[in-house]
Each structure stands twice: as C-alpha cells, then as structure tokens.
Amino acid sequence: MILNLGLRTDVVQYYSEWFFRRLEEGFLYSRNPLFPNKVTKYLLSPDKVDAIVLCSKNYAPMLPRVHELCERYNTMFYYTITAYGTDVEPRVPSIDESIRTLKQLSKIVGRERLVWRFDPVLLTDKYTEQTLFDAFEHIAAEVTPYVSFCIFSFVEMFIRIRSYMPEIIPLTREEKRFLASGFGAIARKYNLPLQACGDGEDYSRFGVKRAACTTLEMLGKANGCLFRDVPHNGNKRGCHCITSRDVGWYDSCPNGCRYCNANHNGESVEENIKRHDPSSPLLIGTLGKDDQLLMGNQRDSLIVNDGRQLSLFDF
View 1 (cartoon, rainbow, N blue to C red):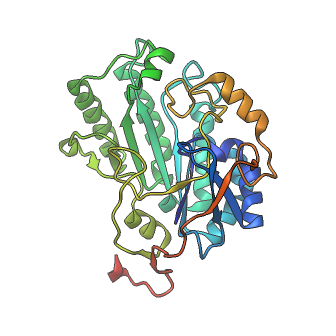
View 2: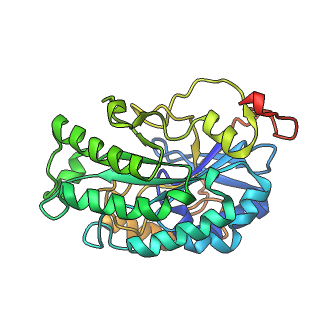
C-alpha cells in the first residue's frame, strides 16, 4: 500500500504531530469522503506500508522529525513552490522562505527523493506569463541542485474556482504551449528535468516530459528498491500515478489557497480545524456510534526487493 499525505489537506504543515503519533501507535483511520460512515483502518508498520508520499507547501514543521520517516519507510517528498503571493495563497510562506526550507529538507532526505512542484499554473492580470517565467527561473536557479526533477500543471477550471477566483484568465491551448515552451527553455538552462502533469497535450518538443507525478519506477529508483509491475490507475480522472491511500480530509486545510478544490466551504474548514484531535486515529473528529470500521486491504506488498540485493542492472 502507498500512503499519501497531501491530496486532501496539508498534513505536513498543519497535522505533523497527529501523523507521528499515528506512526507511534501503529495505525490510523481514514473516513470515506463518498460514504462518511465508512471508516477504514490502516496498519502503519513498515511491512504494511510500501511507501509514504508527501506533498506540502511548507515542510518546516516536519523538519525535526522527517529523518524518522526516511529511516523506516520508502518515501517521496513533493514540495510545492509557486509564483503567487498571499493574495492567492494566504498562509503559505514566501518563495524565498520556501526555498530555504526546501534546501534544508533536501539535506536530510536527499535530492533523489525530493521533487519541486510548480503547481498550478494560472494567469491573471497580476500574474502574467512573464511573471510566471520570472518566478520559475528564480526558483529553478536556487533549487535545481537540491531536487530530482520539477513538475508543473495547469489550473483546472472547476466551478468553485470560477467563483473564488473570478480574475483567473482561462488558458487557451496556444497559451499553454507558450507557457510550456518558456518553462522548458528555463529548465534546459539549469539542466532541470521537467515534466507536465494531468494535461493531454504533448509538450516534449519543448523539453517537457509527459509522465505521471508518482510511479513505482520513480519510488524504486529514489529508494533503491524494486516494485512489482502493476497498473497505475491514478487518484482521479486523467491521473496516471500509482493509486495511493490518502489520510486527510476535505475542508480541513488552513492554507486557504483560492484555487484549491479540496476546500469547498470556509465555515466547514474552520469547524473541522476545531474538531481536530491529535490523539484521535482520525484526522478530523472521532469514531462515532454509527460508523462502520473496516480493515484496509494491505495483504499484498508491491515491493519485490527491499534494495539490499539490487544491482545497477535492475534499473
């Protein structure tokens, strides 16, 4: 099983204490978003978790203990640093502060397990194409020696985003190609491997690889182990990543990013934050009398070899 911290909320930045307590106790509960009374129990021992994938906009709260994850588990760290300010990402650290934290994280986990996400890419009258290119180059110049590669994706124009960020300018195919071309040129300048996520367009002519964000091949190379060849069905429509189990809950991220589709209601976010109990197996709230507790399917490991017997020929 692949465990994911970051699809529904920023666990790393706001709920690290809860997660490390879960690791110490050896299990957690995850509520089904579609059927909230169904709760799944996952065991967290290294023989039950094949890898932990983390995605966050601020790893500073986890830095003192992140080595504990790397010592016990296969891991992959995705660090999101964008071009936007607090008008779009109200509680996200500045670009330069994020860069400093990324460098600290890289020294602990190694560049092979660290990926920079420039995501999502969007345009407004303030955040123009040139603004994005300038920010991308500034970040690339600083972080390239500390990351394995960079991923970018274009904003998805959900109905919610249209109401929360009416200033967003819908991207045409030509604009996407122009942006991909610009990012590709900058990436080549710094020898930064670059790939696009969740877009049907092929930007390979601009030096942009068309690939999933997280595959078993990536996890294996980053951690020196070998995974089985299994289908990658993704975590949403159009995604080609390896399927993972998210431990978070929607409407619980304090970042308040205006483009985010994981928060749907500001009042619900505030209420859920109040319901968070660091000692509960659930991220938000506790197990209720009407909840049905199920055991997660963790019988078959995806790992073929744990890395101790691998040679270069395996890759």
